[in-house]
Amino acid sequence: MNGLTPKQKSEITSQAIRDYLATDGADRHIIAFSDCNRVYACIINTLTEQDCKALYKLQSRNGITADDLYQLRYEQSKAKILYLRNRADKIINLCSVAELEREKAKLQNTAKTLGNALELILCKELNGKQNADSLPYDEGGDIVVNGLQYQVKYHKGSIRLKAIATAKAKRGL
Image (tube, rainbow, N blue to C red; front, side):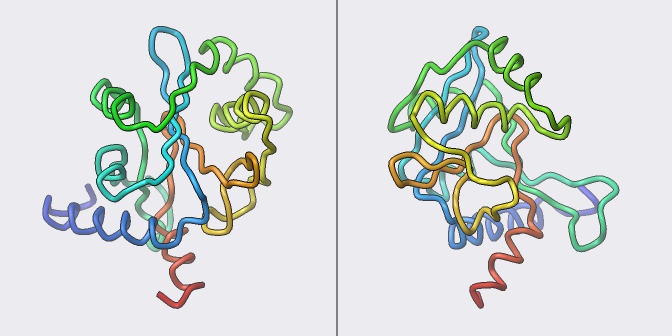
C-alpha cells in the first residue's frame, strides 16, 4: 500500500483507530451486513479498539491529495459476519437486499449510497431520524434514536483519516 511496510501499516491503523474512538461523536454503532439475501443491523453499544481492528482495515484512496491518502474501511466478509453475530448487543433482521436496493433507487440524489438507504430503513424500523450527511462524525451519528446518536456502517463504509485528523485538531489532541 503506497510503499508502506506491514509494520507501518499496522502502526497507522492502530493510531487511526485510537484517534477515531477518541473523537467519535456517536453514542452507539450499527454495523450492517447482508447474508442469504437479508440485511442485518448489528447494534454495538460500546465500540472498542478490538472491534475496530476486527472490522476495519486501512485502505488507500486512489487519486486523492497527499494529505488525504488513507481511510479505515469496513468490507463485509464471512469472518466479519461471524464476529458481528457474536459481538453485537442486538441484531435486527432488517430487510431484504432487494428492499435496500429499492430504497436506494428512490433517493433523488444519485450520490446517495446503500448506506444512506440503510439509514432511512433503520429510521423507519427504530422510529428515529436521520442527521444531515454534512454532520461530521465527531459531532454526532448518522441517525438519532431515542436521543442517542448512532453511527451506521454498511459494506464499503469508510472513515477518512483526514476527517479523523480534523476532529483531533478541533479537540486539541
